[in-house]
Length: 365
Image (cartoon, rainbow, N blue to C red; front, side, top):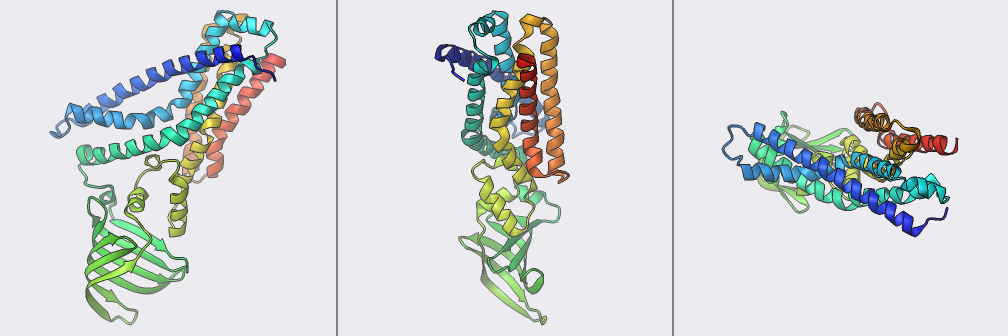
């Protein structure tokens, strides 16, 4: 398939222009709605100034922006193709011998590149800003010092070493920086389920490569107790890993997710949410490419067959239907009803196959 550089460049510029305009409009509306909602939630809280609420809305906006990117691509592509068809530019391109696949190549490629940049560059920034937003939300609007205190039974951690031994840790509460915990109990297991010892301590502080325990008692299998002022327990955990373990997957960047998933698997924690999030991010470039094909089916033949308003309404309805079905499939994957890979890749795969099939039927059928 030979591409005409001039025509391809022109179509690509029009596509980026309309996607940018639609994207800017959507995120502007989202920002205003989030800001209004924050004002409502901050009613009666003296610390929640207008400046702080604007900051919180700005911190949350990048995460919302990456979530609505597929719809910006869909509606931006529809506007691009509708305009090119309305001005007969696509008609002239067809008369010159260009097929639908030739003038779609540049928008599809651009959408794929946008998806790659969004996942590899924009996502880490959005995840960091969302973590800052959640910290402010917990402290200012929810009135809790740290995320770990939200668990009704306290803080639970589990760690395994390379020999198959396990350490189960429980604490009543954690410090704001999550480096010190109080009311600590360590349960030591030899192998999978053979109980070995127990240690209770008033406080434990996380240091590089170890927990330092203060004012505690070591209990042995024979029931004897050995008090201690201070002792240490080796660990591979870091402050960042403990903090991330109680964060939503959305607050973790694309690059950190694989390592953290491996850590959760070694420690015995569920990795369902994190694996699903990681696969959704991997599938995003393919989903954006599929949005361009879906848009083309509703906008490249409006002028020839009429019914522009009807086709536009159908396209908008298709966008919301895709959003609803994607959420349903995501929820099924989150509840382990279907495999994680299927839940993450099914929306992109179905959209790609649907768009390709409809275009083949309309153009070559």
